[in-house]
Image (cartoon, rainbow, N blue to C red; front, side, top):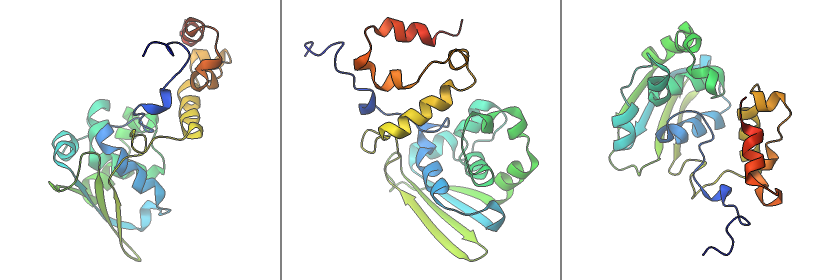
Length: 194
């Protein structure tokens, strides 16, 4: 068991959320981003969540960064309006954006679906051209549906961008190619902010 310690890295074998929102909402983000649909064409959104996801964020508001990351209504609205989901979506200026907040309050409804497995979502979009049904049973980033190496590298690039290590030229490939590094301590040292 210890023979590969320090030589074999299993970074791709763990759950890695692609988006900075609650793990229970990753499938919701995936299905909405997969649709090429401007928010202006969406009249209403019905989000069905499994029990635990609904308990955590089905009726949550977005008054704080943490609550917004857990709020199915806010996340759905933000993703449809912005066509992305990154940390800026949860900043105060976005949480107070009148377009996102009106969309979340007026056009997004949530419900509990006890038949859905954890991590799943069912979405019904009523659009100006008809109804669309979207679903996912396993979120991207779950060990059963892992991020590809390229997707993981893109997330790491976004995480490093604008940070002190990023300004110093830290290459995120060092994290996904750890077996090529002579010292994990050197990599961690390069990631320190100061």
